Length: 256
Image (cartoon, rainbow, N blue to C red; front, side, top):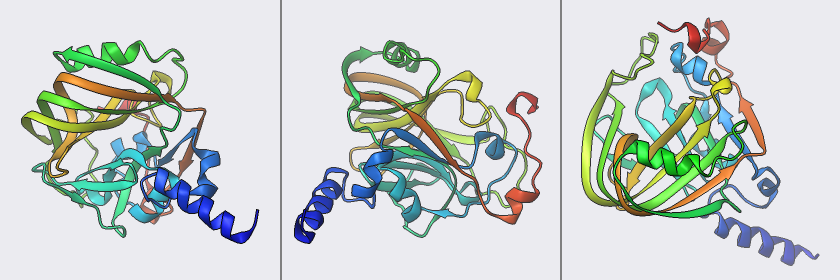
């Protein structure tokens, strides 16, 4: 293959994955979930991030996360990464903005499922459960559809004090949306991975206009298309901050 052909191939692959930095040399890792920091660190109050959005984008086009110092939630869709503030307002994230926790991957070759008339989050989980045939691996999930009702939450304020995060997330603001098109992105993780990843389902939502979003609490779906994929690998990058190195990170089983 000559130089021109190689360049053309890289451009072609980059377009497929939404124009992000996730290009030809990253396709080999498309079947692995890439994670920054751990759920146990987040719960233990380690909120300092040192990975930027631009670096995270090299790991994959779709995923979720939390920004540095709990400054809102993150969702990545087709290579574009968004920042959702505590009031739900959502904008494209600055590439230099840092994250404290994130999970990112690629849904190429995922399983496709169409669903209709789902009346609750539990109903959605039931539909997704049917697709989770291997209970010992993480799944990456993306759902596009028309939602009649959505209940969302976000961390209510930026934290500089690194207190232990309330595991029940009751320190978040809650708000709802009605009759909106949108996209859900997230993961399902086995219980035994609870210190690395939030166990069970963890989904973030953003509307079609890309102006509102947040962490999913409840949902009613008119109709939607699900893309779900079991991940063959799991890669973790640990924070290189002094705060992370000096922190006492506690198992989530011991969090009060």
